[in-house]
Length: 344
Ligand code: TRP
Image (tube, rainbow, N blue to C red; front, side, top):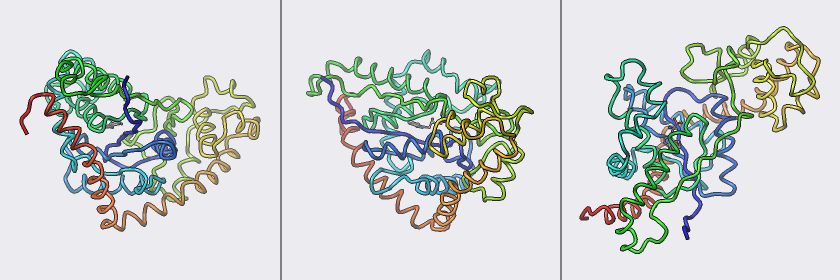
């Protein structure tokens, strides 16, 4: 009954540099989805300011993340690439969703609890409403597929709950206006598997993260060959040689991570990597991994540097992307207004 056009939406915050974890965990997947779907990739600057951002840093980071998107292979002709604040419908719909979502639902969000920390009273109202804005991002395009990491799964479930409650609360009006099968789709999370979960180079049990205090813990998409080599040389390991089979990685998170990175960069499975390096010492393997990482990442790094120097081009991409996004979002928001009973 529901005939929603398949559409992909995803986003990243413009805070800090993108790193290997973002690339292998998310971007590679986003790039692949361009082959099969209409995709919208957003730089979520409105989410970024839920925690104070220096305006000049926000501008620079927004352009940098855009440059990274393009350098990694997102194609602005094929996909829609833009910064969130440009399209007013995100804010408009999020207000309606703030009125649909229940406090009890928001109170269960684990990411808010983590980010707000002990002093919840001092967190911004925006940080609390973050998942409602995220639901609006997705649903203002009636997106059906949302590639995200495991950590965003709960937010996606909330988006589904909001969509369902909106459809239900306004069911009569939705039917009256001639929308059959509900107004909003149930957006589906496409969770990246653990195979592509890149962990910290300093601690194989923690996710590689831009907020880790140690820069040695991550490979940034702006790192040159020397720093990639340096970080991999210093990467934490254990004293045993590499196992010959994937089962031997159990209980060895650092070995598992490095093998996983090699496998993901070369597009094969961990077993294939171990078939080649099993029994060897880490030192030899790390040299091979460095060569591979430099070969795969240096074209991206180079392209990123070129793009970051061309702010005018980046701004044009965002402007055109914003116009295309708006063309999809505006009629949907008009329908929402009619459904809710806002005169326009
Ligand atoms: N919350 C997401 C993150 O931190 C970013 C995001 C914002 C997003 N809006 C979105 C992801 C909509 C997917 C769909 O990773």
